[in-house]
Image (cartoon, rainbow, N blue to C red):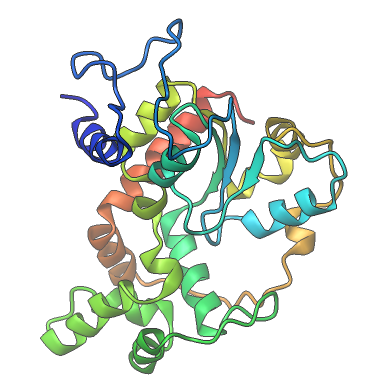
Length: 268
């Protein structure tokens, strides 16, 4: 059944909250004309709470800086942390919460995420490596080296690469962490729960729409102007690209689903 895996996860969550998530397994997409009952006492009864999902290395910090400077932020707007996901926001706000998020090509995000943690978030942040990250960076000095090692013949090197992928913050907090799966994304889109999903490279062109979706007034500035982080040139080898696509196949599928959703929502 379509969306089966997502439904299963959501229903497990709902069981913990003491209520069934879906009206019917035979009708996975909620009827838009029917007001479903949110009966859990563990989540706030907030109508149409808008949540910005901050997917790392997609432009979220830029958006949050604009929101922080706004004087008209609505009470029903939550600027999420990296811990907020499709699943967790249901637990916090109910399944009718509205979502806004950014996304970018997984390979570009991989490079940016690796380099951001390599420099420990500087200059915007200053977050010391975890012990696991320190071990990972002792093996891999560049994102290319890590990607190429994912299917290395040397089992020791391959094992180190898999360890690094599950240890470096922005790599382990991937699209599967935030968005679960392509089916989950389609589910949320069909349920009218996604107000805006925008590709990073199109944020500037769609900034007014993004601010409007969040209930904020228009803002000046651009993502390019505010990105002061070092951006070293990275020439990805064919081997690195193929290895990353193979290892992160689900990431690229979720990315494709995001692009399709953005197109369906009429973004420029």
